[in-house]
Structure formats: C-alpha cells, structure tokens
Image (cartoon, rainbow, N blue to C red; front, top):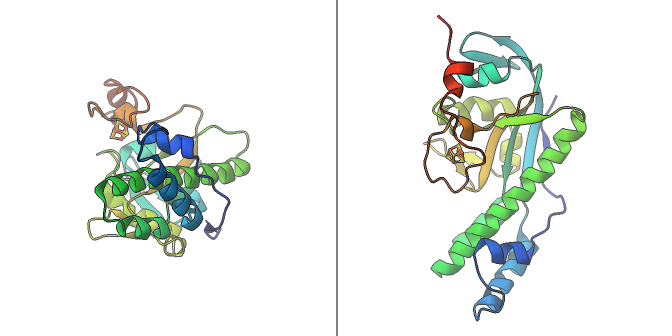
Length: 229
Ligand code: SF4
C-alpha cells in the first residue's frame, strides 16, 4: 500500500488552550499580542501527516522485518509479537508554522509560537489517529517512536523514513545528519494493534519529565522484554 498524505485537513487552534499552555491570563496586557499571533498562526498553519499501512514479514529475537525493512529493537519486536499489520507514520506542525516562528524576533513571542506549534502537531496526530482507527475500528492500538527509548534508538529513524517513502518529503519533514526531524515539532513512529497498552514512559526512568504519561515500571523490562537464555 502506498503512503497516504494528509496536507489539507481542517484544524483548529483554540485560543483558550493556547492561553492555558503559556499560562497567561486573558486579561493580561500582553493578551492582544498573543491573540494576534494565534490568528496569524491559524490562518497560515498547515499541520500535516503521512502514514503507510505495512505488514510484518519476519522476526528474530531482536529484529522485526516490515515490508522488507528491518528494525532492530527487542522492545519493538516483543510489542509486535501478535501484530501482522502496522502503521508507519510522521506527523508535523508543518513548515509554514516553523518558518513563521523563525521569523519572530521577540523571545517571548518565539516561546508562544513554540507552544502553538505543539498544539498544531497535536492536531496532526489527532487527525492521523482518526484515520488509522477507521482501518482498525475494533482494536486498541499503541505506538513506539524511534529515539524515545534506548531500546529503540534514534538511528531507527532511517529505516522508518525509508519504509514510509517519499510521503515524508511531501509533508515537508526531513532528517538532519543527527537524524532529528525538521520541522522540530514533528513526530514519527509505528502504531500497532495490541490488547495490552504500551507507553514508552513505562520503560523510561527519566525523572521530572513534564510529558510523562504513565509511571516508570522498573520491573517491566526484565519481566516482559529481557531475553530468556
Ligand atoms: S518519561 Fe518523558 S522522556 Fe521518558 S518516554 Fe515518557 S515522555 Fe519521553
């Protein structure tokens, strides 16, 4: 199946949410400036996403082969134990917003623009997940993102982008030499059906992470992912 690109979907930028995210009272004297930025961002922003439905062709202890592309991660391999189909994806806030944010001189406005881009990326992910849910309507799904864990390092961006193909370029997302994505407010990953919810945070000991979704489970790697010799 070819990759499917969504580069022109309806998205919303909720002023209230932006104000909450930047912790600003709407009565603040700077509020008008923020309202102006929100309006500009919404007019010009084009969050985008691409995904490709793929099929698992083989497995070893530490690898999984998806449509001819080999991924090296014990955790990914175990998480895909019962999957036959996966969805490789990239979502982004879009180059329009990133270029706009770069054009801002004021540091506070740059900070606000950053938060706005995060909300745009969230909308792209929401749109993506809605599309994938239509293809697997009765399944719970989880995701893994290359680079979010030592157990699936950032070097795996290359095979992931290779698997998705030219669609990543069509949404304007490229990899730097260090395999980070530009625009920076982009996310790549593999979504898969699973009965048991997986979150990378379960295996991540990082303290005080503001984005933590679930607690660290210090026993989980040993009980579920370590190889039995
Ligand atoms: S705890 Fe934070 S750094 Fe660790 S996987 Fe979760 S979101 Fe990422």
